[in-house]
Image 1 (cartoon, rainbow, N blue to C red):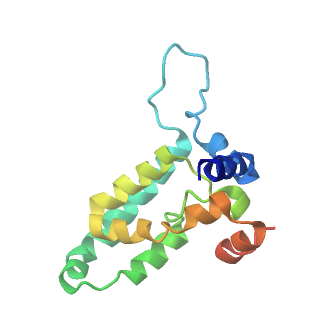
Image 2 (cartoon, rainbow, N blue to C red; image 1 turned 180 degrees about the vertical axis):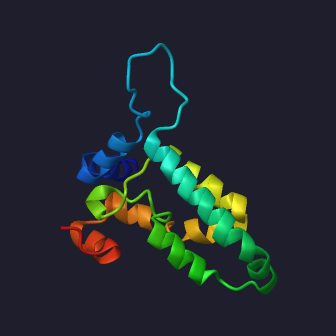
Length: 150
């Protein structure tokens, strides 16, 4: 059993899809050499945050109570969030996504959750099954799940 586990780990480490993780988990690019860390958001991060904040204020908050009351799935909001690029932002570029890092995803999730944590959960939950395909799926499986990415 241990030998099988070790072999699986070697296979996963050698997968080229793992390269995306090292590309997108590094700290924000520093524009100049400074001592210590910069806690400033990049311009791109500020744009993501502003877009998610505006979406939460203008589209989630006005309807959140109604969705909570009825228990209806927020399909129109999910479609709109998809159009704005606020969903599945963790999908690597090689699979057709934005390939954002954890911090960028958290910025977006935090703003959406301000509007309604239930709706934010619905927006994020659809991505739960994607990570195994990203990490261990072959090209055909990734094409099937994520579509054409030529």
